[in-house]
Image (tube, rainbow over all chains, first blue to last red; front, side, top):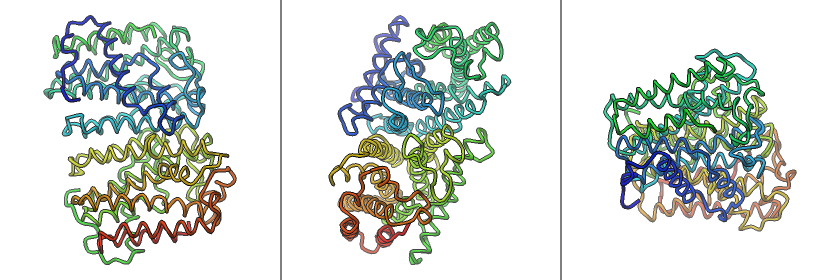
Length: 307
Length: 307
């Protein structure tokens, strides 16, 4: 982290698909470097942590962090860290959510889930350890932004905990077999997936120069809309795409009698909601003019994704 | 946290049992204040977090943090935070360790374990959320030691993760039914219980004025010996005390064919080892003269405890 460079310093005009692949490759390399080596003690735990985290995935949260970093000319070395940190938290949540006492799922990103490939106790410890590692990385001495890092730790901890992601999962569990209305469903998702997506966006922006108050408010509005958009699209895909395409079990929410945007609104109105949320998200980016182009492209990617 | 005071400002000469009770009460009050209210959404999760954390226990780690804080004249308000933070990590580890896929225990501190009182999914989320809360508190804006706080976050994260507490638990799982030799057993415990006990001591000291290099090295040596001592005594109590006295299921390690100091050395040699570790721990405190008295008293408490 010795020579900070703005990312992608020579690639501001890189086409979106290339930019996306380059960010994904950077995050993969950072995660591979920051996770404990597979052969270090305890080997089984470290292998399982790597199995879980280094298996691809779309890396939507890291992409959001990098795209938000373009708003503030953030150094690539910092973006690599915050993007990886958010992905570690996301990976931990998937491992725990897949456990038999939660969603009891056997397939994730086209491979057996962690507790199927290893065992339940190991999967539990994998999640716990990935969470600790995220905070360890975010507090790194060589990050070079100590005055901001504590704010980042607070932001990530709140987004992850009982008033964020874990809290959303708890509401989700309580809602099985019940009818939620739209505001209740929105609260659940604002916590369950929205909080970490918002954290990814804000952490990315915090890696660079300061935003003005109206800019920060606009970015926060964007992040909340983008998080909800992501979830609505997820609900649509869950009941329209195949297991092979998704890399995870399709139709699971309906089978588990979980309330979704599709079960609440029907597929057509869910699609209209997604279109509305996309429009609102893009409107929040207007203040950033061309600096916001990556976030605009990413919003379209989230809307149009097929898996 | 507006008016920092050295703790206990008027109570340096307080008898040890009184000091212990006052620290326990302070930590209890801090935890009660910092945990989300039981009635806040999601209610079931927040109730379970409070059920798990506010049920007493000896608070050995908070006591160590406060006693170490006396070495550096640390403000009570900071010690309350780091003591609570370490207890939150300890509580999360107990909730996860008690789950059916781990130690499958039904009794903790004389009450049903979290997954028995609530359910497994809630217990999983309680542990996850307590870990997040610990990092959130340690990064508090009003802690008033921002230059040190990042170091504290790193220290706590390493002590908790796959190269600390969670790693020790993983080695523990792999060792069931196997014969470990004494160095292997020592590594397991250095991680499983030692790492967090060491963190409690070092975090407490970091709340105050800086230690010299030899002082810090001595304190680290003390912390490692004290952690091992705690575990050896734990192993002895597990096979000599009753379930009623312990407040948790006695004789569990032997029943699960887990290697312990008693299974490795026999009860008499395990007692000798405890006596040796106490001597070594106390020798490491000599450099602190009378400032180390609370740590001396606490070492004796750890050695002589009956539960």
